[in-house]
Every structure is written in C-alpha cells, then in structure tokens.
Amino acid sequence: MQDAHEVVVLRYGHRPGRDDRMTTHVGLTARALGADRVIFPDNAGQSAETVRDITDRFGGPFGVELREDQRSVVRSWDGPIAHLTMYGEPVQSVEEDVRGAHADGPLLVVVGGEKVPWELYEHATFNVGVTNQPHSEVAGLAVFLDRLFAGAELDREWADAKQVVVPQAEGKQVVDPTDAPGAGTVKDPQTDE
Ligand SMILES: C[S@@+](CC[C@H](N)C(=O)[O-])C[C@H]1O[C@@H](n2cnc3c(N)ncnc32)[C@H](O)[C@@H]1O
Image (cartoon, rainbow, N blue to C red; front, side, top):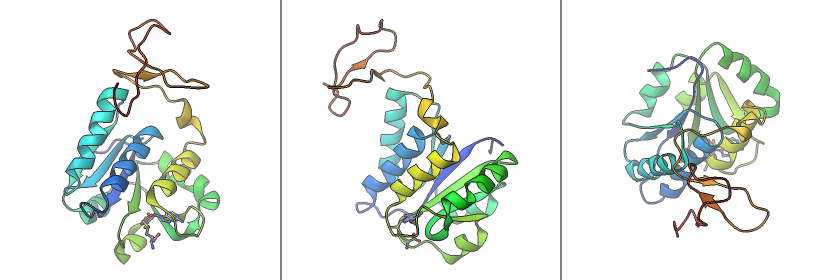
C-alpha cells in the first residue's frame, strides 16, 4: 500500500555475504536521512533485522519490507521513480523536477548493487547521477536524499525511541528519553555498554 507523500527506497539486488553490510547501510541511511521505508530483496533478511532493531532502539517511524521480486515493485509503482546511477543526469540539475514529481505521488528511489537490468533505466522517471563517477549506493543515496529534502531531514524528530543520543563536542552520551536531560547513563551505542 502506497502513501502519496512517502519516499521509499528499493535496494535492487543483494548478494548474501558479499552485500550484507552495504544492504544494511542502505537501510540505515534511508532511515536516518528521511525516507519512510526501505524494500529489500527477500534474501536480505539479516539486513532487515538489523535495520528493524535500530529503529526499535533509536525510533521511527520507519518501515522495512522484504520482497521477492524487485522488478514487480518497479513495474507496479504508482508514482515517480528515481533510479540512482553514475550514468544519470546530474542530481543538481534534476532535483527540482524530482521534488515537483514527488508532490504528485509517492517517490520510489532505486539503488543497485550488482548490475541492474536495462529495463530499470527505461522504466525510471529519472535516472540520477550523484556525480558521473563510480562510487557507492550508500553515498549516492545519502546525497540524493539530502538534496531531495534540502537539508530538512537533518532536523527530523524520532518517535518511540528507547535510546537518544545527546550530542557532544567530545565523547558519547546515550540516554533513556524519559530521563531528565543529562541524567542518563553513558553508553556506546555499538556495544550497548
Ligand atoms: C557498485 S555500484 C554499480 C555501478 C553501476 N555501474 C552504476 O550503474 O552506477 C552500485 C550502485 O551504486 C549506485 N551508484 C554508484 N555510483 C553512483 C553515482 N555516481 N551516482 C548515483 N548512484 C551511484 C547505483 O545505484 C548503483 O546501482
């Protein structure tokens, strides 16, 4: 089910083992930088678990779905599609048009892993390059979302978090959101200690 205002990231293709970290980071980047949900291939269950766990701890809302057939997600999408590729038009040239198209419908942002089918280039409303240099789906997605939201995603607030990071000039502080400011325990979010 699509919501007219949503931004959904589709990870097109996943090679278990080799792509695990990248697929997880596509999901974490989509979540952190303002997308509403991510769709992973159904062989990326471990990445889906990790992104759900982070959402559970650090807040949402953010959806994670596993779908068997990415081709059918693209074919049946009822709204504009932005496919990120080094061969596409410069993001700085098309960002306004993408925002305009998104005003009329939900936006699907597609990032690849291994080679994506040619059909995707034809089916996409926009083929978007974040530079025309080869780099990574995570970097491309981050810059694209920041351009799409014009930086507003950086000030987003999170609902139902169990842990909140208190920004520090030095060191790390993570508190329970129900604690008074400054009264929380100091934790490393990666080790939970
Ligand atoms: C390892 S790259 C594959 C490079 C591929 N030849 C391509 O079409 O961009 C995996 C994914 O990273 C993203 N990507 C890589 N470079 C990009 C760029 N300059 N702009 C936008 N996306 C890029 C694309 O989504 C691509 O499918």
